[in-house]
Image (cartoon, rainbow, N blue to C red; front, side):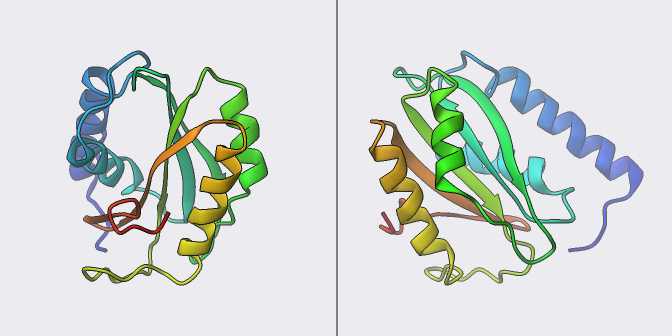
Length: 154
């Protein structure tokens, strides 16, 4: 992806700020998948390495917190289910949406990187042990997102 100019970066930062302030601040009701996806595309656009994060939600689908939990390299970012569970327990989270960016993945309609399916199932199982629902696992690649829940991965 082509690097953003300083002016474009400023516009993206403003857009992320507006989305966070209006739709994704603590206490806000979870909005649609398309809003979450747009927010994540903008938020993750400036990272030069892979990252993995969670949007923690309460029982009424209100956002408790959005946190990047892991930062990796250009082509890998390990995510540890144990740490995700620990982070969920620190908050009044009942539901979680996890996300990661993948800088090298060329998306098509149904494919996902080989390591992500098993990772999503491990995170799903680990959160299930503490009665926290994994609502979705979203992968962002450039200007595209893929919902693993919609693909039936877990």
